Length: 67
Image (spheres, one colour):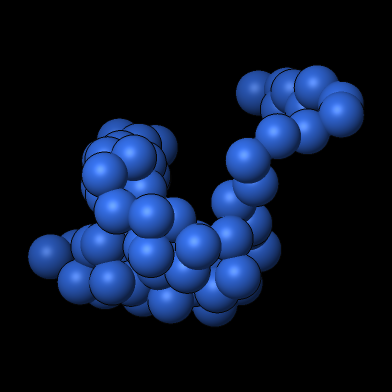
């Protein structure tokens, strides 16, 4: 697999985390407490070190990213 993280690759990786979090409460908790660990577990590959992310169950604000 390539080391390039395209938008399509990110979308597929996130779908893997979301699917598993919907079905596995233990994994869902891992995603909330150790997002990098959950990401790696769901995808078999670590996320790039320079990318910061977290999983939350709800937000009190709407976050939109401009292209």
